[in-house]
Length: 160
Length: 174
Image (cartoon, each protein chain N blue to C red):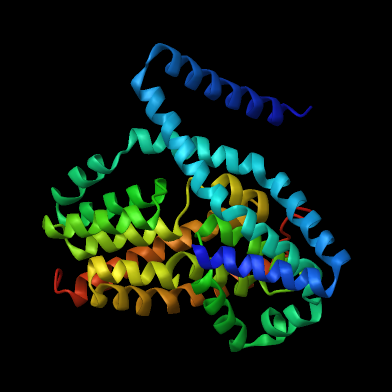
């Protein structure tokens, strides 16, 4: 995360040295866009805060291990799609579940949908790209996650 | 005011009111939701200002021709490779890559290439992949990347071509 601050600071400084006016224009564009999209972010944050309460980590761990493999994968994709958990929480959680005996396949479905399918980011994605593209992209991503889970299952000899 | 907006304002006010009442009365579910809201907001506010400043700098400094050359119709396979590299180094995830992708698109990038970029920013961010491998094992991460990357590119091409043929326009002026 710190490298983002360093890169941004450096880029801003360089830009300022080369051309002051352009830099101010860039900051103006940045502010405008940030303010324009802020309501959509607020919408997402409200959804995230409620969903995280309704579906805590514990609930996810409880459901993933106990079912048959295909229901496990489907449930994992469902949880992964409708939640938004940062990587620094999600992967340790996956690591714990793995030790508890949850299959790689199920965890792969969970982590891939978590990263690619965004039901909660819908308010933002829709603002930028429109409803149709947003829905199609998310369906495609769900499909990719299921294929990845299937291949993970095959490579780890969990199925076939 | 549009009807849509008044519904949104009512929703947000209702939500805030619920949080305030919860904190005043000590209603635990409401307090927990409030904590979730604050911690996620802080996480995003750490990233978004930087992301948007970089987008602003990109808008004023990078020429349209440069984006067209590397990410546009004529870029060929190089465009997808650039999209993967850019996606792999994006910090934060989808909600940061949407505005970046939007900027690229506005400067003439091809739809299927920005879709690849969005996909890549989800699945192959380098710091995240390293973190993942340390918990799940390197084999898990390699399988995931080897399967997902080609699929992301292929589905992006399919989806991009489909929408471009139907003259799909994404919204202007965000």
